[in-house]
Each structure stands twice: as C-alpha cells, then as structure tokens.
Amino acid sequence: MRGSGGWEVMAVTQRRRGFGRVRRERSGRFSAGYVGPDLRLHRAAETFPTRMDAEGWLAVERRPVYAEPEPDPRELTVGSYATSWLADRCERDPRDPQALRPSSVKDYQLLLANHIIPGLGRIPLSELKAPRSKPGTASSVPAAPPGRERRRTACCGRS
Image 1 (cartoon, rainbow, N blue to C red):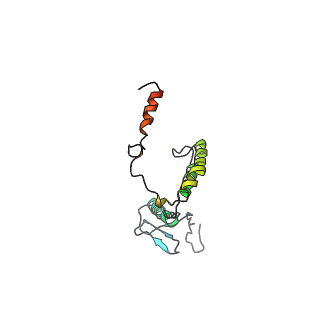
Image 2 (cartoon, rainbow, N blue to C red):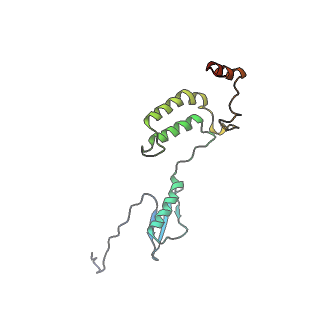
Image 3 (spheres, rainbow, N blue to C red):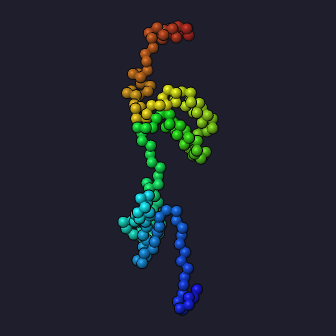
C-alpha cells in the first residue's frame, strides 16, 4: 500500500497470545517475556534462535505462575483427599487407564460414605503412619487359637 510520501506501508499482524509475548529482535533472534501476578515484566535471560523456543520458555514459566497452590498436607484430611481422588478419577477420559468404570465409582462412593469417612475422615493425612510390618506376613496376622485348627480338620473328616 502506498502512503502519501511515496513510501510503502505494510500491515503488521500480531499474533494474539494467551500468556506473555514473543518479539523478533533486529538480530533475527526471539525474546520472550510476561507480566506476572506482581504486575512486573519478567523477561527471559537469553534470546532464542526460533519463535518456538521462545514460546516453549513461556509455557514452562506459565505453569508455576498460574498453577493452583498445593493444599497444605497438615490441613488435608483423609476424607477430603479420598473424595478429591475419586472425583479426579471420575473426570478422566474413559480411555485413560486410570479412569474408573461407573460401577467402580458407585462402589467406591458407598465405601467412602459408609466406612472410610465416618471412621477416618477427620484424621489429617500427616498423622497417618504406615504399618510396621508388611501385610500378609506372620507378624501382622493374628495367631489363631490353638483348638481352632483342629476343629477345622476334624469336621472335614481329615486328621
């Protein structure tokens, strides 16, 4: 397009970004930056050879800036953790191997409501301790009364 002074005016199109900005420098390299929650401009310490590299830096920087804060494990209870775990598994794509079937969801909801939340729901996760012995080992299985084993074999006709 010709301007009034005889020079050519070119339309500059800018890509609309959801986070940060990428600019081409005079050297041909790309710089990247973003305005953080503190309302300050944060720039990359270096320039990048390609636009894709600069956008990759922005993607890496975006995660910690706008990620949801992790709940404090001292305040997280067994009930709230179990409920959020089940909700996460319900929201997954059915093709995801960690997704649950509807029948499993129903069973887990019943177990949570009837057994886990009433008994353990208010206990903070930080207070849970692992058992000292592994499940299924002799030290974790209570010993049967001495006469019990004989009665089982006697009723079956074997001795």
